[in-house]
Image 1 (tube, helix red, strand yellow):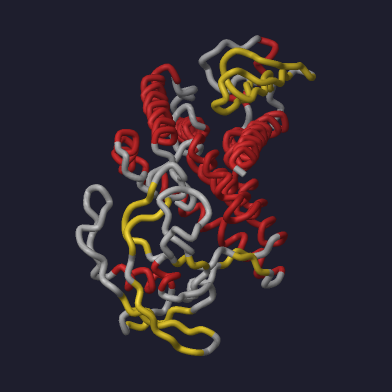
Image 2 (tube, helix red, strand yellow):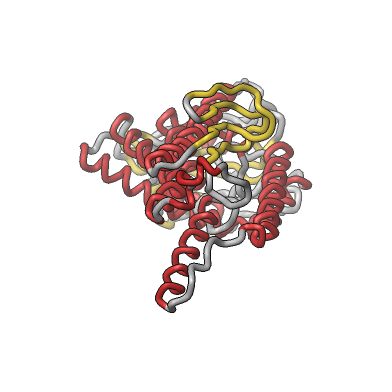
Length: 409
């Protein structure tokens, strides 16, 4: 599933980039502007063709895409014959729509996918009431199927089965899966620097309901089990129970559409929070590239990390989960692209609004039109942002390669 997930991820991202640029191009043309280039990638041309006044193609560096709109900036000369169609001459409304069309396209992609999944697969839900979804059968220090020589997991040895509903731990009633996890790990020895417990695990009394009958068993956590990476052993306390997997149900058309819009809002909020948290996560990324410890699951991931996670998403959550994954990426890109920083679209939007505001103030004050903003004066700030962005991208790449996140993360 890994290679398939990577291929589908690449196709989804390339498709999103092309639609992003198509949004800019369509709006620019509707405004009467001239689009001379539409490319996926940057750098040297690999392949291209011309249709009408626009050249379409692929370039060597797969780091995004662009459309070239005549007169979008004043950093390059404009042929006199193209001057009437120059982008800066278009009405402010058309310019703002053209500049924001890329992000709007990402939002529409996300919304379409978030509506498609519940209407096609159903609404994603998970039983977190305390019901055991799966019991790990054995303890292993290497990958592979359980054998007679392997010790049973603590939960298996204690007699727990799939479908048992845990209602109390050590006599304390639990109302859901998080309560179960918290109580099972309460008063257990902490983990040392090498992820080994600092003391002997203590037994816990687990009360559960099976076939309507209330029963109690004792579970003593074990140390270590094979990790999701077959090449590594996951150290720490291990009990051997998992919550039920995510499932899809069909609660009805209106509920499914409502779920799509609700998830859209949740993804938007999560993307904003993720952007705010990026500066604080940079030290975690440095640590991830130099440490053998498992990578902090709250740290951001780059394209390589997202591609590697795609296979796990499909395997564990199906293609509906993968489409949610793609929707979340589009949401993040759309919001990130609106940051008021050059060379992002949000930077150009901010300049257009500033020019319009400055022009209006000058008119009210009876002063001449101050004209366009001199972008040459903003180049140091734009270059600084690019250096920081490239540096963060390289750091993400290093972390994704040396210490990749594993699904679930």
